[in-house]
Image (cartoon, rainbow, N blue to C red):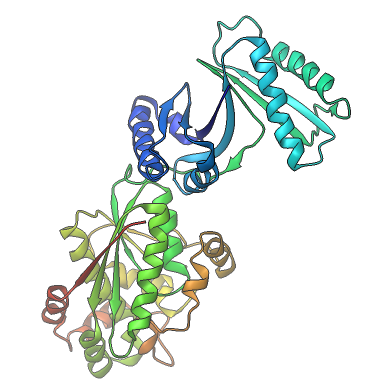
Length: 389
């Protein structure tokens, strides 16, 4: 009888001939995330990944696994051979542990007989193990429709018995869908956008625009902290901090104030695209939500997208602030995001920005500033910070 942790995946199982690539990537990421806990043994057994580690590390390992994209749920299991008596003993042990934590009155046994050579079929195993549990715990009853607890039995190369399914985030392993560059402000939205794209398998780099002294060093530190939190889900991240003060001052002095926010966003997008191409990123990622502010109307987004030639992903585009905030709380970026340090997007915000700018008027107004020169200077002075979990 051996205790292990199982990691179940979802859509990876649908990847056909590419499934092995996704599974192997997930195994590598599990190994990396759990290495500090004694380098546990990790193996695959017919549709799940198993982690064999010292029990004292189980809770820490489970917390790490919950943050690895591609895993749908996690279960502490008892692994035994396929002898029925062994399965029965493991079932009693697993249920005893559960009843020490919860007041259970009803239960159901669910069996998956992956090994079709096993002599008993799934319903028969469930029925017989149910009888074992009833004899061992006379105060509980079977309820096949609405049980308070489940005992799960997976019969594979080994037999795995468990009572918990700890929900994880699902998605796809980071890096299996290429690289993207996240435009990270100090607000609530952009960290959530990064999280959501990483969940779809995108490996993130991050760019931030810093307008010192109009934005403080504490504002910069806040963004570093947000990127650091994202590493818990995304792995290592390179953060590119772009000095943006001179560009904003030129826009403020020489451009029509009602267009200044869109013009600023266009400059940010041009710089981001250049950083992306230098770093192997194939798309930009922003935290924009349609109609949330003046620079996020459909007309403004059309104007900003016009300056880049690579895809721009906006995973929050159809979400409202409450939905985004709920995710931010769940991934633990919210408390950092609401720290009261201004970012460069809010420093020079006009009182009455134009919500329906046209591309022609924006391009005409931009001619007042030598953006190519200013943006090249900014790129030459980028600060790069390498972050790891």
